[in-house]
Length: 403
Image (cartoon, rainbow, N blue to C red; front, side, top):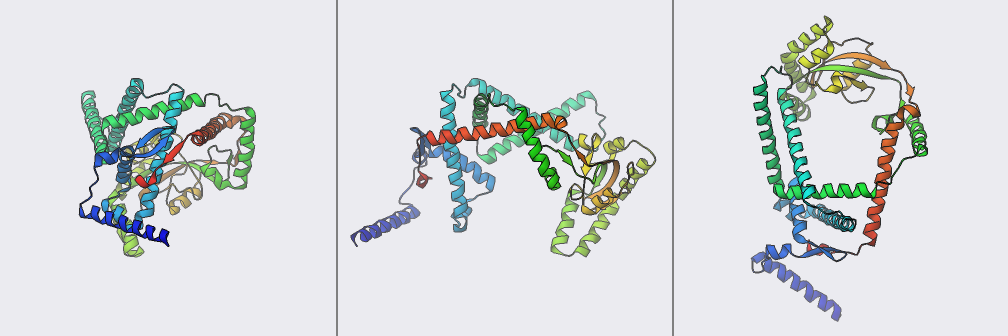
């Protein structure tokens, strides 16, 4: 009975303290709070400030607000995020300690590489912005004008990047340090995995096991790391796509969901009429014998190398086109060009290049692809084993009640 009395008094005290905090009589010093230890790995401390920095980023990613945190229905979700962050920080510290033992630490060299990698990422994003903006347009600008345009895209890409950093609540220097640490860990892992090799026996075993599975269940071929078997019924095509504007596609799906299929179909037909002349013009030129790849460059939204060069492999349920378009494709003959086919996306003009026969690919044909996949599997297996071993040997303390 005395024990129960003490517990009751303790609970009353806790409730009272919480009430005081709510009244503003008990205040938490943010700086002191950030210095609290939330975990230890082999005596090295992980501070709450480190946790809070990552948590703020996760809150931004998930759109978590103060109101979200206060909602009791979200408590389990919030707690799972916090536990995952703490687990990540612990593993990060385990890796940091192990890397240091092997002579790997973040230094000026890794930070310089991180800055170079960031610049490359921004340049690539600038190129993507440029391609998107110039898609479907003829490029006839002078060299000087192109250089100026590149500068504009680079500036825009950097602005977007800076906005993302602000949204995540981190500075560029903080990001560089994070990236430098990742590069250091990458170099460390390469060192730890340099002895992983793949034998001919490994390759043969992978081939036999996966070929058997793919023949038994051809749907596995669609997601297989290495295609060892090609089921019957596959064709290779290229296409010209004249799309409806993005807003009109969204409006069609809204009407379909909120109103009726009849109203949605009526709206779609009206919108398709507006782009029909362009689709018909492309089709007429294709039927007159103009080069299909050139027409793709001139008319199609999809001007990717995949579409212009090797094309796409289509089969029943492939999902690249609407079901009604896919059905027409699979009934076409080699070198046939379809009329402009309607879908909620817009118009599609298809050329069928090849009907692919059923085929079992030989071990020799797929050997190098398999080697790459098996090597990655074995490296992942060893790395995960090392992480587990290091975690088990480390002295880890976690104080989840302080999060």
